[in-house]
Length: 430
Ligand code: ADP
Image (cartoon, rainbow, N blue to C red):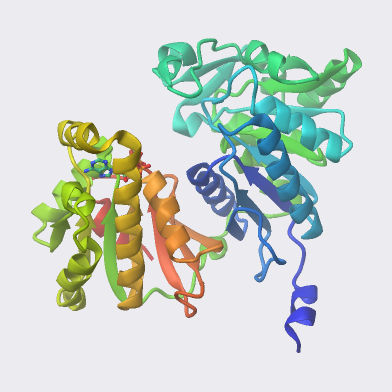
């Protein structure tokens, strides 16, 4: 059988997702897997067809804060690819804190996808009660406080100063924005659909939807059956697989068996990661700290780290980290510049990750969102199958690439995710 016929016989996907950032894509994929879907995450728009069977694909873009035109172009390219794979419903995923500005990118991307899909109505809700994001009367809460009191009002790129999502979205879109409030949601799918129809009759094109509990998202999911486009955080995903006859099933998370050497690389300086590094060291396992000033001096830090790891890998997981406390990070940033320090450390860790895999590591934990992006790129990974979650939002993944044709188990942990024992627990999770 030629590869071409092989691909042609692969069943089509049912759900096509477009995520506006990388770790958000994984978060969404993780929710879909837990709801029973077999999911592949693609890094950027794939060049060829999907090469494995899946119910859903999440295309991870980096479009949250780029120019709206560019975000629209990338999202439309993703849409075209997903439709070519057979996607019956499209899911545009953004941040659960609705990160955007009056210029976009949630509104412009939604408008463009609606136009391309020739649909006149969609929803928008970042609600995900499991992650403490709830929407009531159109107002978004993060934990116990309104969005604009949560710290998000000071975000450097997308300051969120208004918690009312109808007001936040309206200036970003050509469509009239309305609200499906909790009264309708509490009454069930028929009441939600009736509200959709009433809003459309009033000329509304995008409806913010209230949700206070995960059960509301499951109810909402039923009302979304057949809607060509859904826009949301990752929460709404828990209610969609049921519409395609898919129920939670541990098989959805099945990956090839994990074997081979184990390593952790960490470029995250978040509070949770600092704790995880400390806990790994306290457990007596080998750990090597990278010195950003030595990287800046041109020393062969990658070669040194690989030589250090070489003799130790056979005895169990090793950790190579640049993780540091805020004061140390500020000192380095003061000397090297924030961006330059970040890029240099990312490059070094990505080179170490690649070298470790070339040395036989087949189970790799990466800590840090940006660090993950750099490592995935250095490893030549374009598509990952999503497996079981280690901690909420952080699943094991399996990928093949030119660097590792036989496949690599990899998990990408963004900053504040994971329990303190994450680095050791990960290797005990199937
Ligand atoms: P997180 O998910 O915790 O935000 P990221 O990987 O996204 O982690 O971001 C951390 C950034 O900090 C990266 O650019 C990384 O290269 C940089 N970095 C890592 N260690 C240090 C350090 N010791 N000093 C300065 N910058 C660092």
